Length: 209
Image (cartoon, rainbow, N blue to C red):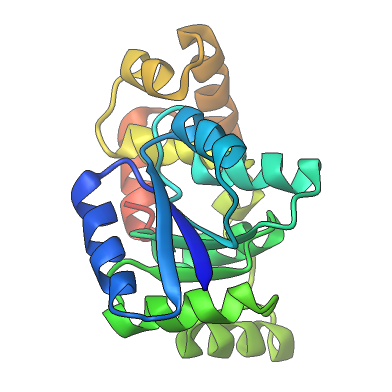
């Protein structure tokens, strides 16, 4: 039996994934978490084979969670299931230690196949992602400016472009407003932009929001 823990801040999303996995006789959801704190508690209390993880979590993001797990040397396999497009976040997730990446808009049957694949120690990517990886190997695409941003800087960019105020971002990420302002300044500098309006336009044009 493949034991799975779900980590997503939306209860309805967790329920949908849980119901989908429940149809598989070889998969059992043994716990659910809505943020990093709840996840850490769960991982201390229960063992599991696969963690199904969202990127956009309150406080520490899914990418942060991946970095922490990687630093701890855990054998836990992580499948990232996110609303963010593959071409923007899949490579970051895989480099951070994820065993697979799946878009929430995909076929429900894909998540069952993905959980089974990563539980065996294999990598899971969709055919579209596999083709993109092949294309990048044969004809490397020019790097977009936002690819040079750190995970936290990219997160700040996306949240600003989504209309959140710096104080709201600070509260959600459990950071001080001053720290968020520093991230914002770095993003503006690296992207060659001057204000939040330009950040928003950039994010929309590049499919980040």
